Image 1: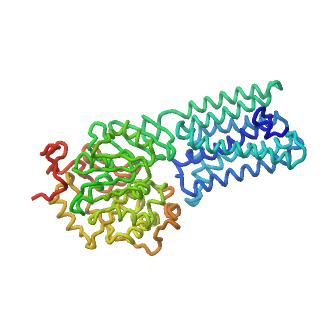
Image 2: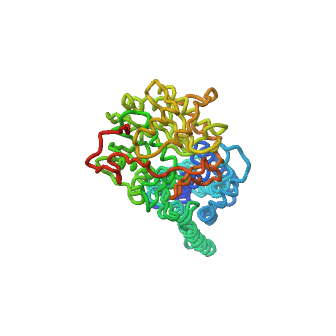
Length: 558
């Protein structure tokens, strides 16, 4: 009876070892993306490095294992290989940040920055797993080398399928990276014990020691402290690593290690991150706003402000269900007739809806992880078709306004200009550092001057003084060296590449209204107004009117 046939009922030791090695190798490959993403991002270059390292390490293990199998293949050696892999997995669980920091010091171009870290973390255990298949083929009780190899690699492939689907659809959505790593380590140890049952004691004693090492590493790797402060909640979602931290009264949402939203728990209406103030700029560029769409929720800072302060209906398309749940638990998100949350992708939502909007806010971009389908000219045409005649599109980009790191911003500006008559730029920090760059596109043919926007800001009651934000306006950038992004060619990863290793400057307003940077030493101006303007917006909480007396839309003060 063949190994594959017996695997269904009574797995042979070699067959079980091959199956488990397939589960572990593919599971670790999927998990690698989550481990390295907070430091190196999850771009195509990161995933290309992960795939290449795993394939190279397995190939080397296959080659050397095949050379040694005839002389050294035994069930006990299979067990030692599994134990060695489990011990290294324990090291990865316990010291992945330290190992990545050491590997990150290697001077390489940005697109190759993750390669040393992936090699150091996952090359050795994958190399050891590569020995399993040729050793198992040597031990398989079948006639002929071809039959043995075919059975072994079929079983290994089935294990890889189980590892890929199980890690992607079950483990990552439900468990932390540390817990998954511990699970793989214990699976390898348990298989090693089964292989040497009734045999020599040394492998059994070693299995107990490695199991203890794996468990201790798991506890050591789950301490609730991060660069953003004490962790209130953390998880691996189907899309990203999510953490909620709190320092003092400020609660911050981190996605893949980057600050995404923040809320002052003692004053939830305060704009903690200054870039959220820019969300109100489109209200100066259109005459009437009744319905707003946010693509991307995060901590729902913008949607909550619009729904509570203005007489508008706000729809939010957020693809990650865990982000929605976290916003409800930690960031005071409450759905209502005025605030509707849809668990779907932004492009899919716009394709399926028959509604039109006065304002669409794109807030789904990160420094190193941009959904390209939300950047292309085809998407911009779709968004334009869902805007009313006087509608405005607002894109919260993370890029640099000039210099080598500005390629993504300039390509997006060029792409939006192919669809919209007027496109405006508002950087949120000084210089050419990586920052939030707000890009606003309108359907009107006439262009607003800075002076006209200042006059509208003085006359129009939108509940927040935007005079400083208006003054950050810049002229259209040069775009001759960047492409128009299209569905069939949107090289977003290569455009983001110059930002790798650069500090992301995100402005934060303190409770006393001064502006300070997060993870940076440069500030844009000495102070800013973080509270509302002295003239209350009609119907705003705390304003002169009650909610029942809200106007139909925005108005010009007389």
